[in-house]
Amino acid sequence: MTGFDQLLAVSAVTFILMLASGGWRLSGWIAAALYGVQLGLLVGLAGVGVEPATLQFSVLGHGLSWKFDSLSWFFAVITVGAAFLAALYAAGEWSEAYRKQGGSLRQLHAALAFNVWSMLVLLSSGDLLSLFIGWELVSWASYWLMTLSGGLAARAALRYITYAMGGAMALLAGIVLVHSAVGSLEFAAVVSAVPGMGNGLLWALVLLFGAGFGVKMGLLPFHLWQAAAYAETPGPGAAFLGAISSRMGLYGIAVVLVQLLGLARGLELDLVPGYVSATDLLAWVAALTIILPTYTALRQNDARMLLAWHGIGQGGYMLLGLVVGDALGSAGGLLHVFNYATNQAVLFMAVFAVIHRTGTSDLNKLGGLVVRMPLSFVAMLVGIIGLAGLPPMNGFVSKWLVYRSLMIEEMPLLFLATIIGTLGTILSVYKLIHNTFLGQLRLEHEHVAEAPWSMTIPMLVLCVVIFVTGTVPGLVLEWVAQAQAAMGLPVIDYTPGGVASDSGGLDMIWVVGVLFAGFGVGALLFYSGGRTRRVHQLDNYAGGHFLTADTRYHYSDNFYAGLMRRIGPWYRYSFRWLEEALVSVVETLAMGMHGLYRQRQPALALLGLAFFTIGWAVWS
Image (tube, rainbow, N blue to C red; front, side, top):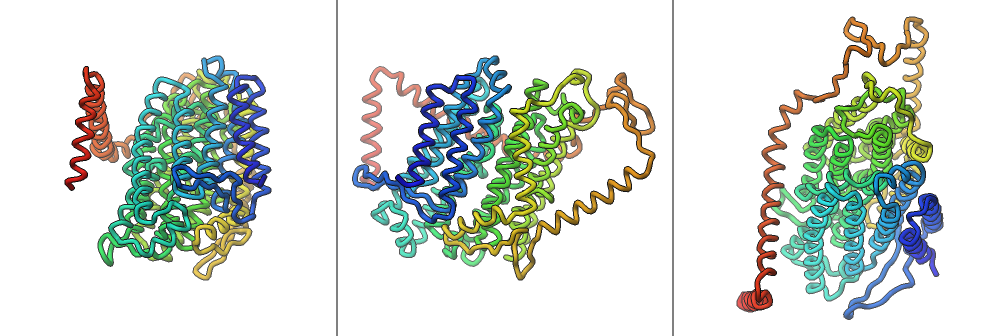
C-alpha cells in the first residue's frame, strides 16, 4: 500500500467517522486530529515525484487511473491544511453555538470531510475520465456544504449547482471530442496527439474546457453564483470553501489547458492571426475577473459578501500568472493559490468571530471593536495586508511575481489591469477593517469579549504562516518550482528570501528588515514626544471637539459614497442585466420541462423529441 493509498484511505475513514459520529462534542477535535494525520502523510509524499495509486480498473473499456505528482501535492497540502484549521475552529465554543441555532454538526463535519476526500480524488486524476468523476464529486460535495444553513444558503447553493451542471456538460463534451480525435483518454495519449490536431478542434477544446473549469473558478462571465454561495455557508465551511474550493478550477486549467494542450508552452492558436491568441483571450478574461468583482466587493456592506466577492477577483491573478507561462508569472499564479488561501481563511475566521460575539456582519452596524477583540483585529489586519498584496505579508510576493512577469513580457495593459484591481482591493479591505474594528465603539457592543481560544488559535496560526511565508517565501517557492516542473513549465530560480533574476530579483528578508526598521524609528519618535494621552473610545476627540457617548460619531455608514455613485450604474446596468437574462432563460426552460412532465402522456412527447433529435442528427 503506497503512501498515496494511505492518504486516500485515511481521508475516506475521516468521512465515514464524521458521518457516523460527527454530532459528538469531541467530533471537531477528532476530525482535526485525522486531518493532522493526512498532513503527516502528505509530508511523507513531498518530493517523491509521481506516486501511482494501487487501485486501477476499467469502465466500458476505458481505464481509470489515479496518481499523485508535485502539482497534486501542492493543491492537496492547501486543501488538507485548510480543513485542519477549519475543524479546529469548529471544535469548541463555535460548535455549541451552532448546535443551539439548530445546525447539524454531523452534517457539517461529514460534508467537510467529503469535500476533502473528493478533492484528493480529483487532484490525483490520471486520465480525463477519472478527472471528470473527481470533478463531479467535488461539485456535489461543495453543494452539500453550501446547503447546510437552509433558506438563502439553499437558494444560493441551487444556483451554484445549476452553473456546475452546465460546466460539467461542457467538460463532458470536451472529453467526447478528445476521445473521438485521439481514441484514448489517457493523459500521455492526449499530449502526443495535440500536435496533429487542427485549429478548429483545439479551439473547441480550449473553449469547452475553459468554460467548464471557469465555472468552478468563478471566472467572468460564470461568476455570479459564487459570492452568495460562499457567504451563506456556516463559518468553518465558508473559510474552507473560500480558501481552496474554487481553486479546483485552476487545477483543472493547469492540467488540461497547460499540461495536456500546452497552451502556456508555445501552442500557437490564434483568434486573430498575429494579434490575439487563445492565451491572450484567457489573460484578458483573468484581467476582467480581477477588476470587476473586486469593485463589486467594494460596494458590499456585509463582511462575508465582501470577502466572497474578493475570492472571485483574486482568482484572476492566479490564472493570469499561469497563462503568461514564464517562470516568474506561473510561479506567481501558483504561489498566489497558497497565499490567498491563508489570507482568505483567516479573514473569514475573523469575520465569523465577530459574528459569534456581536450577532451581525453588517459593516454599517459595527465599529470600534479593536479594544474588545484585539486578537481578532490582529488576525484581520494581517489578512487584509496579505490580500491587498502589501509587504511584509505573503500576498505581496505572489503579486510582485505576476507584476514583474507582465513587465518583462511587455504586457503593459494587463499590468495596468492588475494595478487597478489591487487599488480596489486596498480600498475595500480598508473598509472592512475600519468599519469592523476602528472608529467609535457602539454602545451595544461595550461589553463584547474576545472570541474563545478555540477560534483565535487557528487565526493566530494562520497569521504566523502569512508572515513567515512573506518574509521567507522560498519555503513555499520550493513547492511551486516542483509543481512547475510537473507541468513542463520553466522553473523559477528561487532563494530563501524570494527569487534571483537577471531582470530584477526580490529578497523579502531585506524588505522586511528595512520595513521594521522604519516602524521602529516611527515608534521611537511617537512615544518619545511625551504629548500623547490615551482616551477611552467613548471619550474621544476629533475635528477640534471632544466626543462622548452622547455624540454619535461613526461614519462607516454608506462608506465610499462618492465612489459608489460612479460604479453603481456600471454594476446595475451590466451584471444585473446579464444575471437576470440568464435566470430568465433557465426559468423558461424549467417551466417547459415542468409542463412536459405534467402531461398525461409525457412518454409520447419524449419519444417524439428523441425521433426529432435523431432525424436532425442524421440529416445534418
